[in-house]
Image (cartoon, rainbow over all chains, first blue to last red; front, side, top):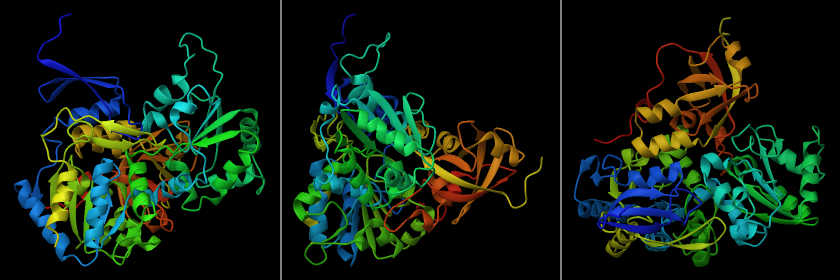
Length: 414
Length: 133
């Protein structure tokens, strides 16, 4: 078939989830995408919705559509007069935007935090601090003979994880009768879609992951025999890759001591690696960027030098009604957090930078639309396994980038 | 079978659901998203205890609020458990017990379930009092 000369092809990195699939083939007519290849349903929807005007955020001040310059001006005014500003989010932004956000927080003397402080933060801290072993996903593929998805259901959160990086990505995988030399396994509180594909499933009661872990390391009674079976499965493997998801980190809270101990114990009989199943596209990038600058992965205040405390977590700031102005960048706390907590934000000025209409853009006093990373905005991002990827920007110029907006606000702050 | 006046105690596990995510990304917080988000999946026995059938409405009352969603059953779901997609519906039920210390645990929300009549709680009711314009 003859190719339309008006079309151009471009390889993209999809920023729709933490997989950051780097093999997306898109065809463009001018700056408009006309076909998307290799993406999952979630990624394709994400990229296509960038071209739906109804889905894109509009520049608003208290619900009134205004030129972007006016919205930036109002955001600057609100942040300048705030005595206790908070910068929150940046987990779906590029590393360049994260650095710009940190710089703005520093200049404002603000608190800066991201969603990791109420999800994967402790796990990431363990990885960044070297307490938990990790490795590139490329090393897992073909080498790990036991894949354990714990409290994670990739068909729903990271649709291409098992086909691009693990189970189905093994070189000798054969759809017509391949005998797997890798064991796919799940630990979960419910029967997930992945459980039906896994060879070994370990069921835990809701909220009892800690008891299960304690039983695995011999510190608690193994009432069902599941912990012993899990331990035996790991011991029989040569290389066990653990993929902890939101289900596990939510169950354990911020005390990961038992999980770290379990990884240490398991590591005495086999090689163990930990790669978190983070949903956000660049949470690890934010945590590493902040760590490089401040020595902490999240919950930092620049009010007086650099300090870190749980009181600087976004949840604590909201619960205690500490902040008088919140700048949300590429995050949607109004969809993600309990309503009972969000009530505390009434009366607080919320400024939101986002490419799309979200529950947060619907309630924010100021909304500034931004470019979609990897489509309209270049830069770099860090995948969950620590690999840094460069983003293309074939549709650049349709919307301002969050880097530009954050830098403009920073310059205007006295 | 009639619905018990005290209702049925359940633990809601809110989880990522790709269909709900796609509906939100495609159409925003509209009807398609509400259709996906305003659901709870129970064990067949639990639905039976409530005197309900697949597709009937269920009122869920948590520490922080009450919502009415559509109930369905799945034999893979254990008794005492309800599965909901993470959304403003599940978030509306969660009280401070879902915020353990500095962590968020939307996978262990205690609720009481009862049969309900009328309509699913409109999504707009869960965001009421906030929107500008």
